[in-house]
Image (cartoon, rainbow, N blue to C red; front, side):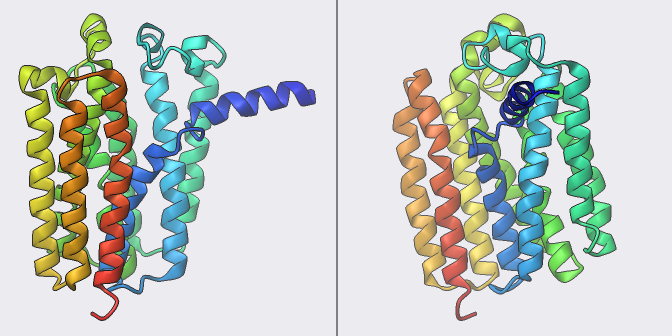
Length: 290
């Protein structure tokens, strides 16, 4: 294989893994870091943090590859996705599946130094992540299924750090599930006209005229769960300040999405990165003297 061809394949695979668009990795990473810091009482094992950070990026990349494989007959008909590798016809199904398998294998090798409970939890985590893209064919709320996939790093983080998965881990999983449904419904608003034409199911379509209201309700439940976590874990005042800031950031999203304009909705989706970062800063500071 000559240099030019190798460079071209690497670029295609890079795009297929969505490494040029890190927002998905960040939205997956923030709740994992929340879990690690809570489980470690503000002092998580540095090796575990590195393993989970790299593993999160690998699994998000694998998920993107599987997603594009599942949507290979649809992406060319959606304005936002028509430039993806499958839609352009520059990658084969075999290449994509081999790439996804390689990424999952690398992620599996990463967790070998961790305990058996973490290994056991990794099995449903992989199965849920791999099956999510296909739920869009029949499940009216695939964003909820994605919420489970995007939250499984939380119990795994507690298991790796403490050897146990306590109540607070499951509450945090539910909180993140609600947050994921909220921001991914905003993401689905961007594609709603196209998805209606091609028959894809999304929460934005299922909620109908109540899509914006639904987004804000899920955001609200997320914040209530996070308030409970702060009180239950006896976090210090910086955490509650971070929740206040996150509430303001989330409130701003309403004004971005209420008219359902594609560009404004996509901006609101991206802004959830700031929500995740703000809450992590609150957990980090709220545990400094605990």
